[in-house]
Amino acid sequence: MLTVLYLDLFSGAGGDMLLGALLDLGLALDDLRSDLARMSLSGYELEAERRVGHGLSGTQLHVRDLAQAHPARHLHDVRRLIEESTLSEQVKRTALAVFERLARAGLAMAGPAAHGPKPLAGKKFVLTGTLSGLTREAATELILALGGTVSSSVSKRTDYVVVGKDPGSKYDKARALEVRVLDEAEFCQLLGWGVKEKGEE
Image (cartoon, rainbow, N blue to C red):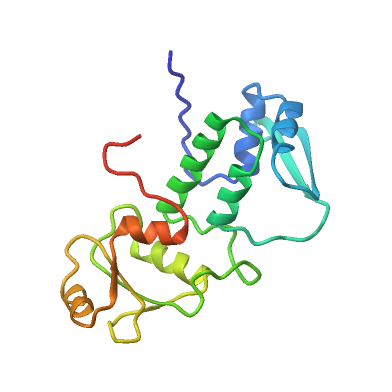
């Protein structure tokens, strides 16, 4: 029988808050530590404590940054950590699907990317049309985080034109100038992650 957990996140929730809720639901802290040890992560420790406030009680999980390194991690970094881990294949598939869905919803992974890799450095993009899995703002943020730039007009200096539904004249100009045109799936492959077709779970 399928078990569904519904979260009413009316004011948001951080990763430590979600893990605290899972600990309250029965996840053992030692099991959480054991599974995280299957990934190439270091310089941290987990502590849990019971908190009561305003008539509510719950578990607060503290993630202690022992290394004080504050690494900038983006979607491709998270994918690599998961794929190279010794977690089960089912857990890997589920975790990757969750992070990719979060990214498609416009989540900015890890904030500033000042020290992260820049695979799109020097590449100029133009976005046109409506993307199905990303907002225009989210796509722009991902490009900038990976070192690329985004322009509002197509020229011979444009490297890629990313087209969605109803792209308009920018698509026609890209074809005329022989600028490489990417659909959404090709764009996501360039970023290092895929977009599922409609109807896929």
